[in-house]
Image 1 (cartoon, helix red, strand yellow):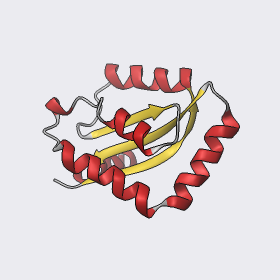
Image 2 (cartoon, helix red, strand yellow):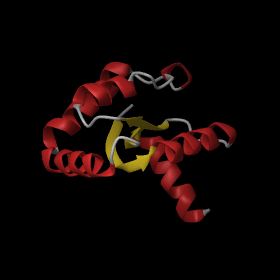
Image 3 (cartoon, one colour):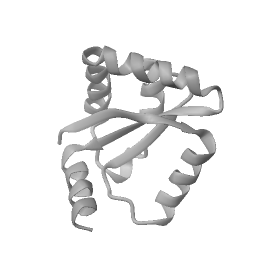
Image 4 (tube, one colour):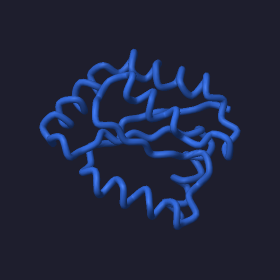
Length: 115
Protein backbone atom coordinates (compact mmCIF):
# COMPACT_ATOMS: atom_id res chain seq x y z
CA UNK A 1 0.00 0.00 0.00
CA UNK A 2 1.31 3.47 -0.88
CA UNK A 3 0.51 6.58 1.11
CA UNK A 4 0.25 10.28 0.48
CA UNK A 5 0.55 13.26 2.78
CA UNK A 6 -0.24 16.89 2.12
CA UNK A 7 -0.85 20.06 4.10
CA UNK A 8 -4.28 21.29 3.05
CA UNK A 9 -4.71 24.50 5.00
CA UNK A 10 -5.24 26.37 8.23
CA UNK A 11 -8.53 26.23 10.08
CA UNK A 12 -10.03 27.63 13.26
CA UNK A 13 -10.02 24.91 15.91
CA UNK A 14 -13.81 24.82 16.22
CA UNK A 15 -14.34 24.36 12.45
CA UNK A 16 -11.84 21.51 12.37
CA UNK A 17 -13.46 19.88 15.41
CA UNK A 18 -16.89 20.18 13.79
CA UNK A 19 -15.56 18.66 10.55
CA UNK A 20 -14.10 15.72 12.45
CA UNK A 21 -17.41 15.18 14.27
CA UNK A 22 -19.31 15.19 10.98
CA UNK A 23 -16.88 12.66 9.53
CA UNK A 24 -17.56 10.32 12.44
CA UNK A 25 -21.32 10.56 11.83
CA UNK A 26 -21.11 10.13 8.07
CA UNK A 27 -19.57 7.25 6.22
CA UNK A 28 -16.01 8.45 5.84
CA UNK A 29 -13.91 6.77 3.18
CA UNK A 30 -11.58 4.29 4.81
CA UNK A 31 -7.97 5.20 4.33
CA UNK A 32 -8.30 9.00 4.35
CA UNK A 33 -7.69 10.98 7.54
CA UNK A 34 -7.45 14.69 8.28
CA UNK A 35 -5.22 15.72 11.15
CA UNK A 36 -4.66 19.01 12.92
CA UNK A 37 -1.80 20.46 14.91
CA UNK A 38 -1.07 23.78 16.61
CA UNK A 39 2.51 23.89 15.30
CA UNK A 40 4.00 23.54 11.86
CA UNK A 41 6.85 21.27 12.84
CA UNK A 42 7.75 17.79 11.71
CA UNK A 43 7.44 16.49 15.27
CA UNK A 44 3.94 17.94 15.65
CA UNK A 45 2.79 16.42 12.38
CA UNK A 46 4.25 13.04 13.25
CA UNK A 47 2.58 13.12 16.65
CA UNK A 48 -0.75 13.90 14.99
CA UNK A 49 -0.31 11.11 12.45
CA UNK A 50 0.41 8.64 15.22
CA UNK A 51 -3.04 9.33 16.72
CA UNK A 52 -4.80 8.07 13.57
CA UNK A 53 -6.59 4.81 14.40
CA UNK A 54 -4.61 2.57 12.06
CA UNK A 55 -6.09 -0.65 13.40
CA UNK A 56 -9.21 -0.23 11.28
CA UNK A 57 -7.18 0.58 8.14
CA UNK A 58 -4.35 -1.93 8.12
CA UNK A 59 -1.90 0.91 7.59
CA UNK A 60 1.80 0.26 7.97
CA UNK A 61 2.72 3.06 10.35
CA UNK A 62 6.42 3.01 9.45
CA UNK A 63 5.52 3.72 5.81
CA UNK A 64 3.04 6.45 6.79
CA UNK A 65 5.66 8.15 8.96
CA UNK A 66 8.21 7.87 6.16
CA UNK A 67 5.71 9.50 3.77
CA UNK A 68 5.32 12.47 6.14
CA UNK A 69 9.08 12.81 6.53
CA UNK A 70 9.63 12.67 2.76
CA UNK A 71 6.98 15.35 2.24
CA UNK A 72 8.69 17.54 4.84
CA UNK A 73 12.13 17.09 3.29
CA UNK A 74 11.07 17.69 -0.33
CA UNK A 75 8.52 20.50 0.08
CA UNK A 76 10.20 23.16 2.21
CA UNK A 77 8.54 25.97 0.24
CA UNK A 78 5.07 24.52 0.94
CA UNK A 79 5.94 23.95 4.60
CA UNK A 80 7.21 27.51 5.00
CA UNK A 81 4.12 28.92 3.30
CA UNK A 82 1.74 27.07 5.62
CA UNK A 83 3.87 27.85 8.68
CA UNK A 84 3.53 31.53 7.82
CA UNK A 85 -0.26 31.19 7.29
CA UNK A 86 -0.60 29.39 10.64
CA UNK A 87 1.38 32.14 12.39
CA UNK A 88 -0.84 34.78 10.76
CA UNK A 89 -4.02 32.95 11.81
CA UNK A 90 -3.22 33.07 15.52
CA UNK A 91 -3.29 30.58 18.31
CA UNK A 92 -6.93 29.56 17.88
CA UNK A 93 -6.13 27.87 14.58
CA UNK A 94 -4.72 24.56 13.45
CA UNK A 95 -2.58 23.42 10.58
CA UNK A 96 -4.66 20.81 8.75
CA UNK A 97 -3.11 17.96 6.80
CA UNK A 98 -4.38 14.89 5.02
CA UNK A 99 -2.83 11.46 5.18
CA UNK A 100 -4.24 8.68 3.07
CA UNK A 101 -3.53 5.54 1.23
CA UNK A 102 -3.38 6.55 -2.40
CA UNK A 103 -6.14 4.24 -3.63
CA UNK A 104 -8.58 5.48 -0.95
CA UNK A 105 -7.83 9.09 -1.86
CA UNK A 106 -8.35 8.31 -5.54
CA UNK A 107 -11.71 6.73 -4.66
CA UNK A 108 -12.72 9.79 -2.61
CA UNK A 109 -11.92 12.13 -5.50
CA UNK A 110 -13.85 9.96 -7.96
CA UNK A 111 -16.84 9.96 -5.60
CA UNK A 112 -16.71 13.75 -5.35
CA UNK A 113 -16.49 14.17 -9.12
CA UNK A 114 -19.23 11.73 -9.95
CA UNK A 115 -21.34 12.35 -6.82
